[in-house]
View: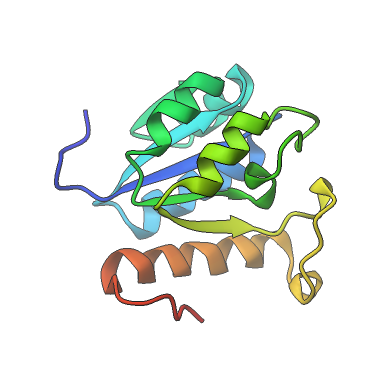
Length: 149
């Protein structure tokens, strides 16, 4: 059970959970005092993030919709805000709930969801994840404004 005074980082992933796994590992390493809640669209994604060290985990559309409101920060691939992305695993309800959340969203611009972010191609996926983790640290510990880079 997460303590109420811990900041909660929600990591959302689909398919095989590879991106979420790396995010959980790096966040646990950089921010050990934060709670990590892994939310997978399927059991494989959730299991990968659980094995990476998530403090709590749940699977499926309802679990994502129910738990997102608890988040201080939401992270994952950019597809988590795009209906029917990730081979259809991100339902319109998931995309709407994540997009509408008041939590800060730190999204990795993975190019598999028909969304292109100019400038992101100059970084490897590992570099993008490292940048995202740094931004999450800044958000949780500086908590002022959105100037992150």
